Length: 524
Ligand SMILES: *Cc1c(COP(=O)(O)O)cnc(C)c1O
Figure (cartoon, rainbow, N blue to C red):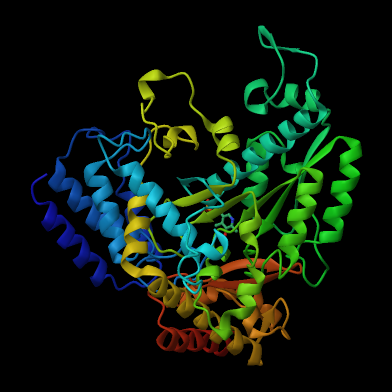
């Protein structure tokens, strides 16, 4: 299309001139909706051409989108922004429109770049143990990854589906193997020995394994885990909450886990353990210190699978090695002992939607579940170590998601990213200190907690219960910052999640304090 560069220049100008703050006004939203094609209009689906279309996009659509990438003070959900280098890389992806489904090293470097980016990501998050750590003496850097199976996904939800699916395969086939060969069973039209869930299906495999129930043991896990459990046939009811205590409900109760595993062993119940890192309301972590080694030995003893949902929290492992982050490092220690790990790149890593990653200890299990077998026209004819993405993930055809991640890792490096994450944590802690010390607000969940336990999420409520009822709305109406409304202990609460590279600790703190004071002063 002629004028692509003019279009980009125009987009930049529109974005920078936007002055209606983080959220579009109601009037802007209404005008935008009214501008959309109506199916009773005689010109419906009559091509308008690119110029008129661009005019419409800039005039009617762009102003009606929220400004989550235009400001560092969009604190809703955990959205991240897009680093400029990631945005450029993402536009390259669109321009070249690579289909990353088959590893074709003689034709495109895309799958090799993907694998390189995943290795860099694993190293950033120290998932390989000491090999990642630059402080380890030279000569000890042999590259042996704990997670030889890895892929990009659309996000942590998809990665959680992959994790539970691999866990399901492992715990059931493991039990079939331990029992020794069974009588062949009817599966479909043929009679074959049941050895895998992937081959025989969940019902036949559970029968062969003597499994009555598959349970997911966790503590305050993200809602997407229940969705994943539903999708892969375990059911939402399979997810069981085992909180360490009423005051630390995000932490996994290891004694309860042990009890469930040992009881289940005799009762035909198999388990997938899901460790949350971190919990969405509080940002707190499911394990601490030596919990992971303990969980690992329990899982090995009873044939359980450990999956970590590390969507945003696992990035605490990439914080600089400084005292201020020691608590967070302890709380994310040992996560590399899991069997599988889900994480988001479109949150803290600040790449565009939609990109997550999945790491798995077992290439055999991951390809067992996800291989797109028997399509010879899709085979790579390559003896390479890199599998075709279509054999290890949900999609066949898919976007070259790796490139923005690769660009960010290359551009920022370990220290650039560490400092970016550190700025997020520092702002969150400043805000936490402000609400903690304020007469008008209450810092949740534990006002006596150490600020060192704060990662990027701050949970709080107004002490005035009337103000608290619509606190989030009042804050968001200022259009100077955006927070999410949530519930904690049965009451409404507000939640700030700092996740943009644009964070400017001093300037943003001043705005946050100003807004939080203002909504108290103007309450009626
Ligand atoms: C955001 C999030 C998810 C879901 O991730 P999507 O990127 O929305 O698919 C899962 N778990 C946790 C802990 C999250 O924060």
